[in-house]
Length: 203
Image (cartoon, rainbow, N blue to C red; front, side):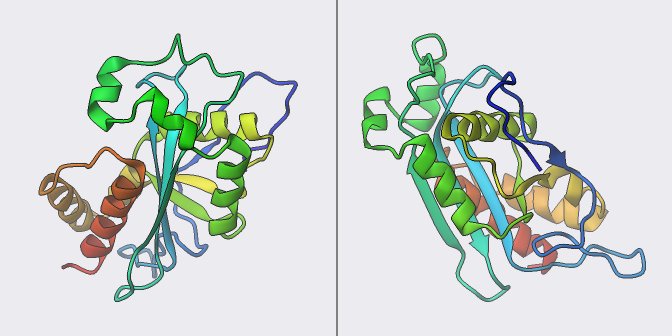
């Protein structure tokens, strides 16, 4: 669990890469192939730049509550916190990828509002999967510190997890390769969530 101490320098939430037997994790039976456990949660960020000094500008979450159910998606732009120096950490190349302009962020939620929404969507101590590794951990940590609200959930590295099963890994990677990422937080989280459900159900 990531604990905020405002007296400390900015740090990132821990990435949980171990198999965990809570809801939303991969579960194994007798050491066998990972089994799908619902609900599954995915998170994705868009950021001012692809660096570990950049700031989150959009966050999205996708939730699969069952194999047949509709995947729920929520996302929001994030209004810059007054402590964030976007002048130093705004990359025009990143803007061309995600298409979000600095002016668009005036419509975003504050860090407090965005962090509270994320915690409201996810059960306490739930694993939320991501594919951005330490970048996603950094952006979540940056958002949490600006909000003064610790994430109630843990981040899980989906790439590490799917590699526990060769067949699932191949299916997952093949499905990802068949579609281009939208490069917006909500649709990207949904794409990852749909891809994992398809891989684990062998669709």
